[in-house]
Length: 380
Ligand SMILES: Cc1cc2nc3c(=O)[nH]c(=O)nc-3n(C[C@H](O)[C@H](O)[C@H](O)COP(=O)(O)OP(=O)(O)OC[C@H]3O[C@@H](n4cnc5c(N)ncnc54)[C@H](O)[C@@H]3O)c2cc1C
Image (cartoon, rainbow, N blue to C red; front, side, top):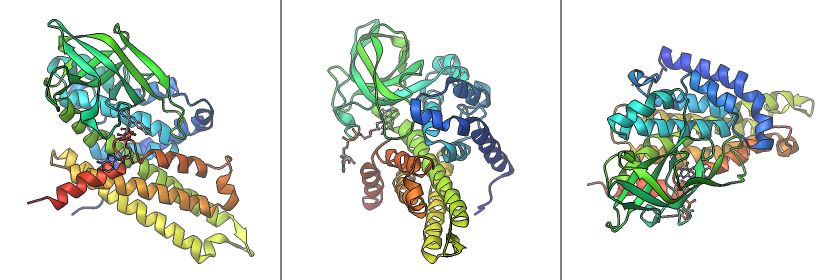
């Protein structure tokens, strides 16, 4: 077993950290107020190859893979969980096209997606409940020359800034699990954006509705095989969505650790920095242990995906463990700051709000336990 990062991974971490500190950090306060995703920043991330990290070089990406992606999301999340969320979903959509799209779809869209020239939003969830995929009510009717889609997707990341969406819909008249996935271009008749949500955190990342009303989809926009809609959604969510949430959790814990150590060394009580107090040291040690344990789960799961091995137990475990660790670590860091931690002048309250959003997104932590627990307990 080799626990050392490669030279390439070290260089990537340094480059993304520099980018995040120079280009993203100055925008954080404004994003907290406006909640808009800065388009210039998206363009710059595209030019730097951020969206194409898992896309092969021949399709315009860097082909660095899922472990590299984890490091990238972690470093962006250390500065802004909102931008890390927007980025990880852009990578998810781009990754789904390269992994699951037709040759024609890859040829048309992958080079543009890899460079962030267009963005794509995977849209699965409906108001009937994200956990109950069989309960999705968006309908696809095969009209011979085209498909007609009607339904409403909710909580969709990048809904209002994406040019494309992957929509999962029930095949009209089909069996219980007969779903398909479709690519829809912005501007298609019958397709529109709905409300924008007002979230407690992830500011700078737009979340909203996508609405289809008798939306006419060309036959060639079927995404993957007909009837494989749920499998396509679950593969994308496992390999990209959940792993993205883990990366953001790592970023928030790293930020909490750094902020805690800095404050503990600067805050003087009883004539000495509070870093001398055992309870402060305990909290810092606990944050460190949670972060490192989460990193091992995360990097192992990313390695499995890179090596095309079964990974749902490891991904689900990494998701619930790291996101709950992030909730605890951001809270402990806030406690170390005393009253200052509750003030908007410091980033601690933002870290706490952002950490809460990690729990439901891309599958709730109850569902993560169901997947990992079922796989482990029922294994023959
Ligand atoms: C910030 C953010 C971004 C998102 N982005 C996207 C996106 O880009 N695309 C997209 O399609 N969706 C997106 N989602 C939706 C997300 O995937 C859903 O929120 C998630 O799947 C949970 O669905 P729900 O919120 O409807 O909760 P529900 O499914 O209604 O769950 C409610 C409660 O019941 C529990 N529960 C449900 N089933 C079980 C069970 N079998 N056993 C035990 N407990 C259970 C849950 O854990 C939860 O506590 C996003 C959500 C958030 C918060």
